[in-house]
Length: 178
Ligand code: XMP
Ligand code: MG
Image: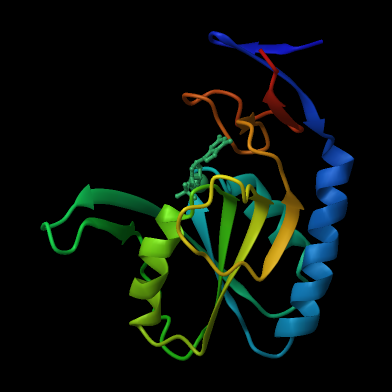
């Protein structure tokens, strides 16, 4: 049964158990790589809240997490788009930092934001994503950990929305073919 959200129909794509299974695999990798390093996870709201929560529950090592929002605005002509973090109240200098993102699409957001974090001299900086949608990529983003590589179709559910709706769905749906 397609799921109707506003004007669009979505069909089931990734089941809850499949998502959780992949998150557990990612958590095992992260535990192996970060045990003893007291990593700091920075989850980017809104879309990553469910992914961040399920992943963090699996990480039974000493670790911290914080949540930020990214706000973008047009800077001067020379600097182009500027993306700033709202709510980053942690000192990341000399910390092992892992960014948690729901989905990477064109890559623009993180491509612009990561250099700002690197300026703050973390001990290391890696990116972990639930969904990697490589086809529309226009800006390079180094992705160290990914749960799924997905085709270039709009998705919703499990934290991801269509105009604000769909975040509370336990599975991930994709836009139905026209
Ligand atoms: P970029 O292009 O900067 O964008 O990598 C990443 C952000 O775009 C949003 N996005 C989506 N949201 N379904 C969604 O619900 C999608 O298929 C989708 N593709 C991109 C998302 O907010 C992500 O953080
Ligand atoms: Mg997002």
